[in-house]
Length: 143
Image (tube, rainbow, N blue to C red; front, side):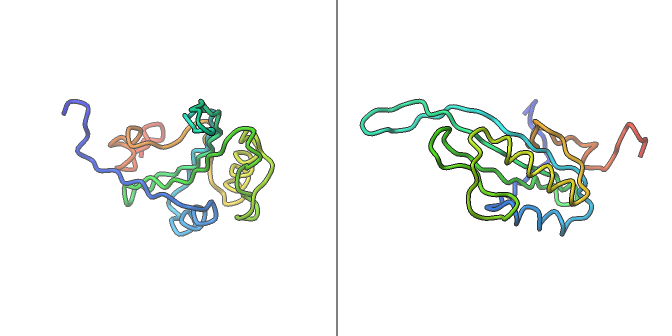
């Protein structure tokens, strides 16, 4: 139990980026969103063969310190499959984005339109949440 925290952290997963942003609008105390795009490899069956398939994942997360929940939206697709990320600007359909960079940049732009601060290349995970964050303490500002 040395590395375990007694603080329970729920993750609230959103199926669409639109519902993620609606949830943020309903929580005006949230000011920070972490946005990341990642390349990864996952096993996939292609006919009778098992191959390591390159994938792209884009994730947006926010931490609600009042409910102790991490809000998360993510999308993942095969690199080179022709199926690419959801169109963030419209909330539906697909767009041509084989690397995830366009989707990431559109999410960041949408965050800025909502007056949210953005941290690039990171996402909230349960291990990131510390007691100071839960208490609303910002040691740099002394509050």
